[in-house]
Length: 397
Image 1 (cartoon, rainbow, N blue to C red):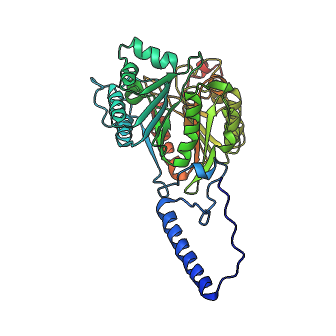
Image 2: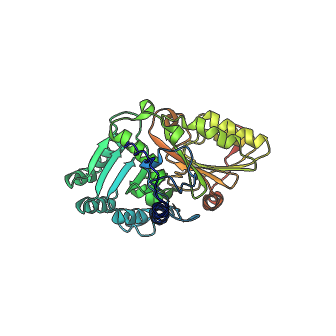
């Protein structure tokens, strides 16, 4: 850091002092205008202190947007089609729009992939000078792409896109994309035909350089070959506030995500709603049960496949008298969402399981915003009547 030059102790004339005051006033006005336009405050004159527990401000761009307009939520509408070439009306259409408007970088940590239209958009971005890098799973990413005969990763690499996989048995199960270090796309949705057309999924798109910086740090770890529980945790600097809205990001396995999620559930005062592809984590299940026993209104939707096994939390919750349903999608109910007290949403790639918590690479984002929670509650209410109450005999009640 460059040292500041000491002020001169020499006395100035009254006229010179007046000139200095005028110069300082002009300087403050110029810096104030610069701060209003860019959000940068090189002398620390205008900081609001709105952000908390995050990486150094000097490394992070300013926030943009007003209340509620810094996030967008998309949900899939499962349906069978004769052709899956037309992505209109799916989250993939929104994803391609983000790819097409990227100016400098697209960094991707995404589990499965089989959409040629997205590959074409990424190749076009690389050709126009955008740096495109993709971390994927070895088996469900690279090998599955080769087995399908699509070889989309090979085509992207030939065009200059950087591709790396985790080279390990546990899963690189993330589904996040970072655009221009400004915007983050995450949620439960794999970039596949099933993910976009057939399964129940959610996507949240966040316009926040500071949230993007948190995801960039995780991406850089994986790009450098650090995966799973041995990768470094920076959980203490993964909280921020965007336009007054608290945001926390968690990464498995290094952040002990289930332990971090427990207080969210345990502190529920009025209502708990969840949608779960896989819910087998006993401590999280016990926290939900305890809240119901304390009089909290609890309802949950489980993916039917696997929900009747001895490992699932469904039998214990249902047999305890809670309102639980198995989903009605003949394909896959793929959400991984908790909604607490109509104001806090936890979503991402993280299934509520020991494997997700202890072995895989996963992400969860927790946002406390009633307007956002309302969007996820609407999705819950759309899916609730599609589901069915479990058979008590099957549950072993």
